[in-house]
Length: 66
Image (tube, rainbow, N blue to C red; front, side):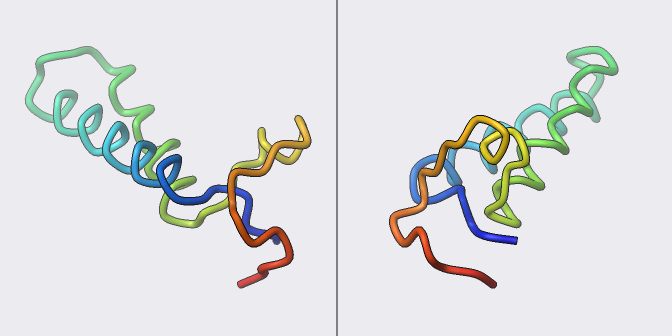
């Protein structure tokens, strides 16, 4: 699995994921807030399957593998 999420993209995914999960846990938004797990996971693992399908890569070192 090649890394394809880097830098600012990674930070934004983690922040957005945590905010959505927190809002859902507090009952401020509906069940869909738990979908914040997806951007959180892609930010933590630095891999996005959608980026692979679209041929995108925001990671500066394209040959890096974990």
